[in-house]
Length: 313
Image (cartoon, rainbow, N blue to C red; front, side):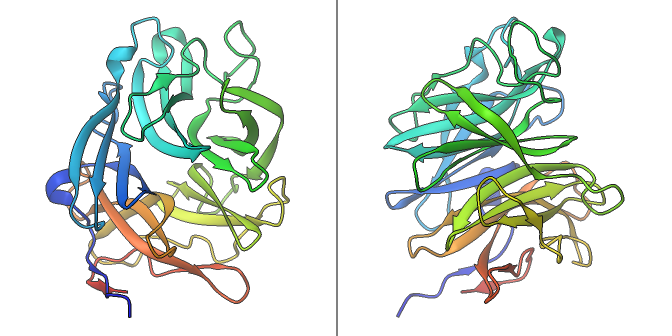
């Protein structure tokens, strides 16, 4: 019989203290965590930090795996350093983090780096130019109004895709990770609604489960909430779940914001969502939360997230 796992959100606040956009991955027998670290809004984040844990409850800080000192004033990736993720493919670890340089007029874009070890060191793949731009110029030919937030997904056939968001929606491109080169035309995954809960979308995260594709995404139209869209093919059509948002702080006493989630598997292959929350009276502090996800008989995502009470599973 499996040992019961007991937890209570927020997780690891004594060590992690303040984190947005959390991402957890199991490598070997250890869980690793990264995410956006403060300061969040003035562009002066110091880079990408990594934590590790053997039990998802007690976390140890490893330190920076990519520091902003790799940039200079003329680097397009000098500022912000938001929403890092680590994607494993063919035994190598690909780090994505979203940066920009306002003085150069370059909006939020994915910076990609690679390492043979999850804890680094990481070599930059597209330091010379961003992947996306608001208009065609000498740095980039792919036009999207700021490639906010990046999520990498590799399908069963070995093709890798990068999902990015803008105010026009969430888009999916095939990408050659070795050269950080986009391939072909984009697929629209999620369009913003005109008057619903998700008029501005970000924080996308794609998984495949039992042959179906799921794109989780967040919106801050009303608060900070999570929805999901589903497709039978990576190229779509993608259909939003009619129950959206599936994770919302609305109606949960003491909770404000529960968004920008990622999905990870535990040692038993069970799926979890990691997301950040804010509690009553402290909008400056973002905290890590985790909860189980599963699927019903109609292949729809089910979860009890967000939770603040003691959970046993």
